[in-house]
Length: 124
Image (cartoon, rainbow, N blue to C red):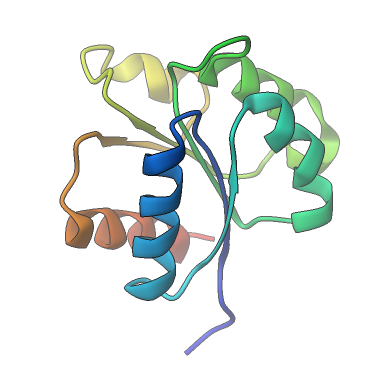
């Protein structure tokens, strides 16, 4: 088994933030740093050095697309894999065209969430 993958998870809903952290750590074996806003995630990314970013789309102040653009503008995170975890599924290819490597729909089944995140993490 390889080294534990680190996931930065940016989500404004506290209950969902902690649920996803619990699921991914307990069932997936990941280390997860939950952040409550795009600004917090951008502030903490350097200290945490994630392997993957899970990112909500609809957040106050700075939406997921803005966070993704900010990540891509920084040399240290320009190539970092980003996966949107969102209830806004109707956009389809918009997420991939924005530079994300994938999309996971909310609501999700816990086992499917772990399976999808593991699949994205294997590409790292």
